[in-house]
Image (cartoon, rainbow, N blue to C red; front, side, top):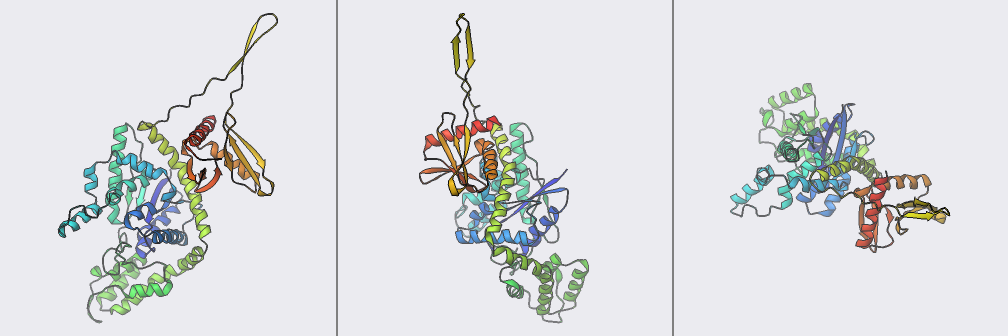
Amino acid sequence: MQTRVLTGITTTGTPHLGNYVGAIRPAIAASRRADVDAFFFLADYHALIKSDDAARIERSRLEIAATWLAAGLDPARVTFYRQSDIPEIPELTWFLTCVTAKGLLNRAHAYKAAVDRNTEAGEDADAGVTAGLYMYPVLMAADILAFDAHQVPVGRDQIQHIEMARDIAQRFNHIHGRDFFVLPEVVIEEQVATLPGLDGRKMSKSYDNTIPLFAGGAKGLREAVMRIVTDSRAPGEPKDPDSSSLYTIFRAFADAAESAAFRQALLDGIGWGEAKQRLLERIETDVAPMRERYETLIAKPAGIEEILRTGAAKARAIAGPKIREIRDAIGLRKAPLVVTPPPVQVTTSAEGSVAIKAKPHKLPRFASFRDGDAGFRFRLFAADGEELLLSMPFADPKAAGVLQQRIRQLGRAAVLREDGDTLVLELDGEAVARTPQAGDEVLAHLREALEQLATQD
């Protein structure tokens, strides 16, 4: 049996060493095991809680995706996606919100810290606190529970959120009478779960005290390492390794023998400048090969986008049925499709006998055709013959056929949005077909046809 492992990184800045050693490295190592089913995501919904800089979030999504791939993530082995490409996650967030106790959220570390800061400043306890910050633990629970993750590798500061996800899942399971959700377990790499930043606090994009993993190249890494705050002890004076950020970061990259040697050097009075140079060289040994791959990836964003869309399709294939199951459990079950009995034809023979024959009941249907030089398209017609969808052109008729089969399976999960005066059907974030016009009536008719197609299958 495989263990499903899930983790993600908030897209609010440039990936740093703390991200790498605390989440990316252990998660990728786990993904290479035959007994692991790995899920990795870009937590861009979470980013909106922390940043209102749209350009920063957009750039961060690309940089973090390239970082995971450069660090050795194999998208063919894992499920790699953007959080915002999975509409089932915000839907599940609301379902979980409705069973989550306010008292539980009041105890969340991030919220309590904000309240404490306001209290110390003489402000209202909730000044500047958004509902997004307050609800952060529920969104994180939805990230995990939507995929029935067994294990979640996180930094030590995130342990509470996994415990809250378990509490929320248990509450839902209890209310609705059976185990709808797997209870996740936290996975911590004890020595390197949280790295200190330039100022000694936790390395965090929120504090802008990070050591970038790839940004700025080798020069940027050197400049950051040389800015790590140290005490005033001069060369020759013993240094305390246990209070030194340099030693903590060094251990995250070195083996036991290397770490012991560096510790002894600090105790023997190595100068801080020389200690930083040794740390830089040890980090660069691991990072330089990954940096080269990163620069190749970041130069071709279209390739990264394709990988993420493919991953989203894999993720939704799991989250979609899960959410349909949850909707049924909480009373949002869709009424069964009422199929009108087919009309009958009554005939009377010359001898006076009566024959009753059912006429075939019409159902929605696809009609494929070649659209000149544009390629191959298809239309979806309702049972009454109304045209509901016209597909985008395909160079390969087989691709058009595959798309028809996927549409047949959508039912309620179909993603439809307005685009000007038409409705667009999306798959994996791409528009694949359009309606002749927009409007509630067209939308209702199209959804009914899609439900009928799904029922046929």
